[in-house]
Amino acid sequence: MRPSSRSKRVPTPLDQLFNPASLAVAGASPGKPGYLLLDSLLNARFKGQIYPISRSCSDVSGLKAYASLKDIPGTVDYVICCVPAPQVPQLIRDCAAKGVKAMTLFTAGFSESGTEQGKELEAEIARLARSCGVRLIGPNCMGIYCPKAGLSFSYHLPTESGRVGLVCQSGGSSVYTVQASGYRGVRFSKAVSYGNACDINEGELLEYFARDTETDIVAVYIEGVKDGRRFFRALSDLSRKKPVLVVKGGHTRAGAQAAASHTGALAGSDRLWDDLLEQAGAIRAHSLEDLVDLLVTFSLLRLPRGRKVGIYGSAGGASVLATDDWAQAGFELPRVPDQLKEEASALVSNDAGLILHNPLDFSMFAYTETFYGLVRSLVSADGFVDLSVVHMPTGHGAWLPPAAFEAMMESVRDAVIRTHREINRPLVLVMHYLVTEWHWQKTLDKLQRRCSEAGVPVYYSMASAANAIDRFLRYYERRQATAAQAKGG
Image (tube, rainbow, N blue to C red):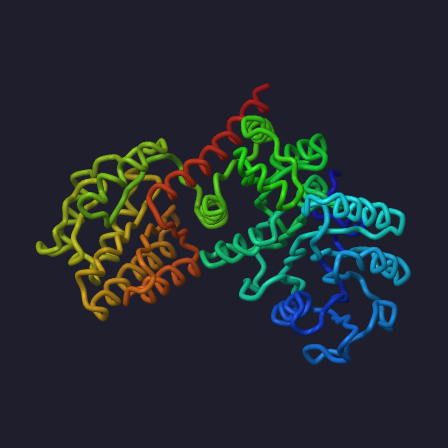
């Protein structure tokens, strides 16, 4: 009998990183970075015991503090290091003496500094950690985010778990990706910001996520690799099991120089990366914003059966531009059948400015209580389209007083959410944000948040939606072709 993929396996140091029963934060004095990380853990409601380490305080954030790791009376599974770089070797020795098997090095000032001293110190801590049996994430990184365990490296990150894993070489990019994706309804199982990768590197992390039964989709931000062969093998293996979405930072000469000073990464040529990702079966994202669009798509969108798209709610020139965006991405916009035109005409009053083409063009006056009936009728029509796009051009707000604009947004929200819940067909919302100080910005935020909470994919432009959904479909088209080839051969 074939063993289940969910069968028990021997825990690894990486498992301990994501699920520690206790942890210590070294360098947790108020006003220091460790203090902020400690507060993030408290805010995330870490499930285990937290021990602040501070030479200057006996109490930090209501927790008893200890002068050193060795002074802590209980067992410590994991240490977050925020002490200055010269103090790191001694902390590693203390970890070995205490029986700590895993540590995140938030501390910077190593190879990314470009100095010989920084490079030598990084090599020293890597050798020391290996000899002591302590596994390291970093240095120069944010570390671990695992909402199930209550682990977090920043405020305002979702506390609910999801099915997305993140492997991110950059600390700030890891925070942005979790935060921006979370705002649009995506939830993460685990995220790792791993920085200079002096020990645990991108290849080992990809191997972990290939085995992780809590993760279905993996996002990657990478500037360079430590072990190219291992990385390619791990990426190829992971891509056979799960969608892998990759942003390559430093793909220009100037960007590669910036990457070298950021994490000490050796970037490689952009053409080489294109070929590598293609061969491995990974999906390339072109920016962090593009990565978030892809995560929204792979996490929330129901798989369309084909490439026929219906667009509802565009007006004037927006209809023309939307047609260009979707056609350039390889989609078809079929004409509206006569019977469907008759049904739509019966639902909307004559003063709505309805033009029954695809994209369906109508004025702001169509956004009334009848909008739900119109959208539901179009989405549920058999054989018309494979994907429905509700377009909310927010320029309508310039024509309306705040109360009227809010009522219009509520009509759109109700139509989208009710249709999404009642009809099991692919549906997305595209809405354009303009300037944040306009009086109706909060109304738009509310619309977007409610739709995302209901599981509706929300995009901020037609082009970003079309390009993300195109790659989503191509991924599954390729998988189907590979499966058919394997079956036939």
